[in-house]
Length: 133
Image (tube, rainbow, N blue to C red; front, top):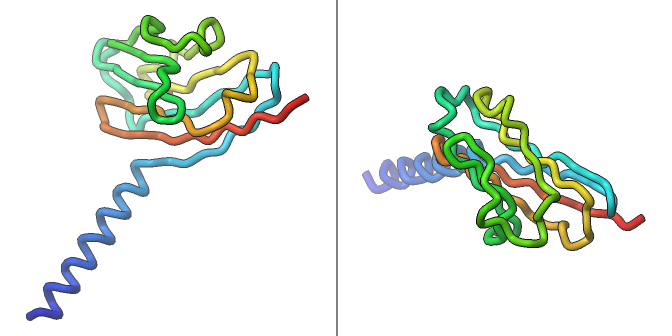
């Protein structure tokens, strides 16, 4: 009986790890100082209604890069270092594409970005590498 419980626990841990792995997609994107990159982020399904869409882009877990609130871009709480350098693609939100273009790249832009899709409770991870000119 004890062995059976151990096997069940191992299977549960494996399934949780498998689920987490599917939810978090790690991608690396490379750019050059002064250039632009698209940080990819997509949902697993169509999003239904525009007003149901809420997505948060963060850099290094806490820096506010870009928000999509009720289907509308929101830079109200955006950190100053990203002002006038970000854009998304509203025409593909309903298809589940929340990718973000980051323009005029700086070396300080390098690092991990997170895209949190609220409706599906999904976090997509993107590593940005920025090379000097």
